[in-house]
Amino acid sequence: MRRSFVADVVWVLVLSACSGSTGDMSAAGASSTVTIGANVSSSTSLGVPLVTTSTPEPPTIAQTTTPTAAQTTVQTTTPTDAGTTVRTIELRSDGLGVVAFGDEMQEATATLIGLLGESDESQSEAWLGDSTVWVHWEKEGLNVFFSDSSRYRDDGVIHLFQWSYSGLEFTTPDGFGVGATVEDLRSAYGDRLTITDFTDCGVSRNELSLDNAIGFNLGAGDPVDPDSRVEALYAGAAPSCD
Image 1 (spheres, helix red, strand yellow):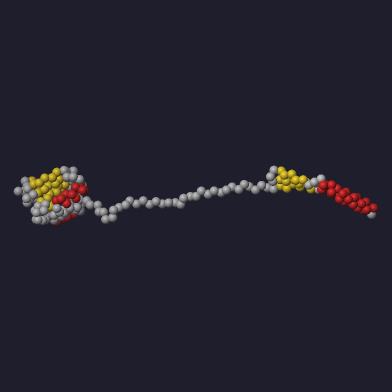
Image 2: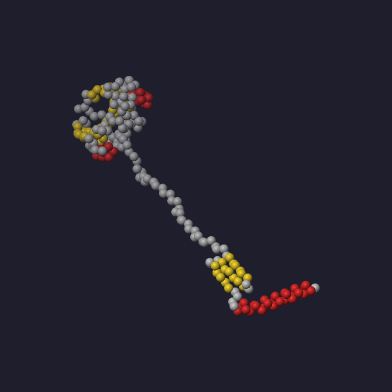
């Protein structure tokens, strides 16, 4: 009992001492704050240090986005002229494909010059009627003949009436031209071919004639020999030798 009493007395004295010193600490400004850096503060109150620490927030990084252009597909087209037809020469029984027997000379020659360029030679001959005009393209091996009178027309207008060809570029619609063999022609046309062996204006020729419309000139070749080759072709009304 005595020890408890003594302890109580000591506790009362401690409380009194603290109560008596409270005013002095307030008057002296017993509270002080010290700022450390920007994020740490130290406080003392009633003689007890208080440290508060704050964690800095990470810096804000602005996100930048690079705009990407939408994918663009460019389609290129090569313009073509609607209705344009590529015209070429064919060795036909009725003309040359781009021109026909009976066409006026001025129109026919303009068409051929447009395809082949200027002719190498032209001259007039008294072969048929009052006037016969021969026009020649050396490189192509093409000859065309005009007259004011033929079986195609007889109105006095100079017109196309025959062609002959000895070049290598152009062929018949069936693909036959200079260099074709008799066997080639026989295989394709059979009995439609007939043999013509005659002298034309002083020149002896061996020929195969297709439907009596297109002549395949074999030169000195034998029309019976399957290996004989075509050296020239012609079609149209034959001129007289007068």
